[in-house]
Image (cartoon, rainbow, N blue to C red; front, side, top):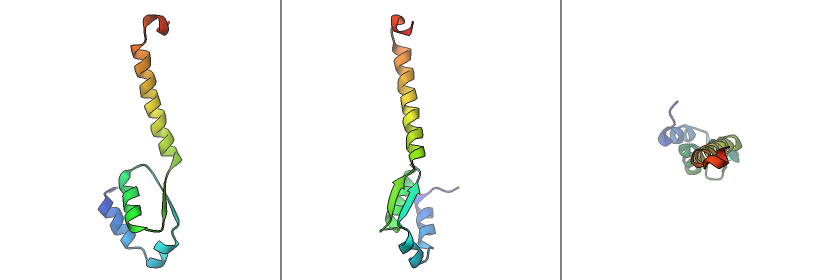
Length: 79
């Protein structure tokens, strides 16, 4: 699917004004274009990031850091 900001803004522009006004909260993933398009076109709406994606990225970064520490640890620590 197309995740370009302009495509998303065009989609949101196609919503009826009363539909746009009725949207109070939008939950998006951490893809920046979703957030930016929502902020630009749904002015009164609160845009929140999905916890799943935040935790997934956090766990991935922790795994990379843990592997680096393990790889660089002294022989005594590894045993």
